[in-house]
Length: 383
Image (cartoon, rainbow, N blue to C red; front, side, top):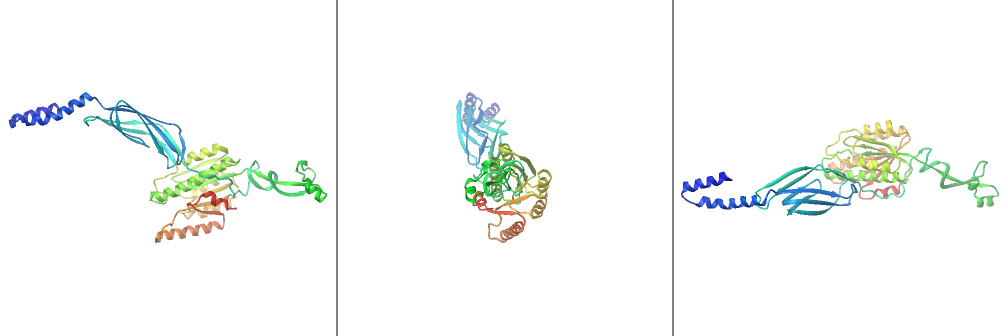
């Protein structure tokens, strides 16, 4: 700035006019006022209450700013702009409309003085995370149950009669039957001792095989498909975690990930945490045989496999037949997404998918799910 003023004085002598000096006076005043104002600076702190949320929840972020100047602060969720004199408290409500893991890595801070002469820029290292779980549907009872169960007592009705709560039949008393199971009304009517029979309830192993491979370049179609598939997996996992059954997960997406079957809320939270990372930005070239290998290699035989897939690849058919031949019971839930348009490509995709569905219906139970309707309403009518 001193050199600038010296140059203006030199031009004044050369031009024999005080005009260059007068033109430089406003700039000099701005510089002096900026020096009197001091260096702009803002210190930012952020806080929020919980770390786990569900899609659609609102989060309150609290920001504490100390310093002075016009600021522009940006992190992974919010952008703050305004003016801070000494200290300022800001509260922002944000609706979490997309499931996934939000990790706070850095905060960009840009501050300038009121005259715009001095600037403070800092990329502050940030810490913290938000886990946004997928939205689930309330499922009262899963109508489709595994054909084979374990010997441990659970909530799945077994095809064998034994200890349970569901009444099935009345038969004649044989030595060894419990006296509390005697049906006295039937005994009086037949003049013979008659006892009640109940349906045995056993636990079962369930594996959720989630196919979220990306076959679309368009983000809109992929997001709709991904959201429907992940919400279906989360809904089923939540229901199974409330029962006395073991539930596991196999994910085929940008890679292969899996969780061995376990019980209760532990299984639910393990599955929910893995579902946060299924979103992919690149097209997938991973064959479905990887998922088939994980299921057949690490999960018990006679497990109930729930395959959630849009059925966009031909290699699924042979894999399902092979798993059935190995003794696994399979239910296929296929969200309807492809072929919504009337152009030639959409009609071809729609025809290919229908052929694949009809082939699978010959071997396994298949649910053709239109994602415009809740999944629970579709499963209610299944047997």
